[in-house]
Image 1 (cartoon, rainbow, N blue to C red):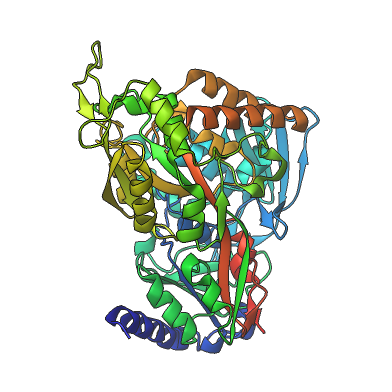
Image 2: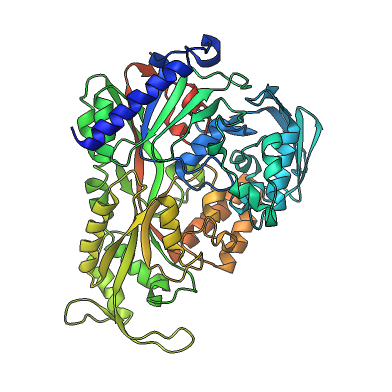
Length: 559
């Protein structure tokens, strides 16, 4: 047993020991059992970076927010929108007003949960939409006002009808006004982003859980909120442990220390299927991996990478099939769309990956005027004008984050070998975690001047609005990692989101996907399966609700 395996195993045991004391006074009604045998232990390779929704960018952050904070609506089994805090809602005939009837509830500290909390959250996000709250403002696009006629009624008014209005509200987390309002301080509300709820435990929550222990790169403990307005969790607690070493996570699964693994390493999926006491579930997932380019006109060097035709050549060089089989153990398929298959009819069937064709890639690069040098590496001629650059070889750096659920280094080695065949030399740069990688990709200081390329991933939402929006100009230095800016695309994006007729909006969404695929700020690589493992001692898992619905933690129960 490696030191890492031993340390993590002892950490889980220690956490369970602490929980034994913490749960001793819990009633069965408040947590589904009040004993450590009923604690659901989860292993993951995605970490919670912060409990502040105005700051977080990591995938796992969304899971924490949905467990802590009320949402008006959420996704339920079958990936259908359903009420969360809202028990019902009515949309006005003109599409400009949505009235929500809210369930009665309390925050975990006993303070009444009312529509005023939602109004404060909405108006605060709108107030600082161009600064402090920019990362969450897109979900309230078009909102003109919010009001609370009474504690259980919320009225949201829009400037104009918005096609994705309800789906966007799924991404809005209602915060306790009595806790957060005091942090609306500093220039531009900077106190809101400075606030660290993880330093004031237990977190005041309105969702099914509060957090009583937090470690961004360790174990975070979710304990039931007895005042939650919805279905009570079956588990007496959920202990989520982040693993930097997937081998250690699988060792803990085999040792019976984990009840659920939400990110089974793809290379381990096949051999785990025969492991006694463990159930492996593999189904089409919503993870889309990509090969991204710094597409900003601010880029200082290697500006030939801004040419979509060059990037087309690079797509022909991309060994998608090899990556799917080698890196993902066959648990993935070649993919070209910024949306995942979970988006259903929103996915444009005409957006398809180009084949791996080295001959075609070389033909395009030859035609573009990039001859091979004596060492086989292509040469870029000198240019003149406003962005003049000297002649230089096609040698590029690829930023590879380590916050992925696949082997990013192994994928890079396949890319390196494939691009060598077309006269392009790639060098790997360690990207670190998600926050560190984003800083490198958009360096310096969000100006998009330095980076060449990167590999990463998205977990696209069901409705296409968010992911189509990450490549808009308004998302620069926010959700945009490519730095791409195209006014014509921006206009197309705005048109789709203000179109309420489903068929008409779908046509616009398809056009937007085709434009992204043609311009190639990203080249999507594969769509990965969702591969999870669970102990046969537990049942009721809803893997597809990862980051999307509260049942992800509330529905698992002892078998």
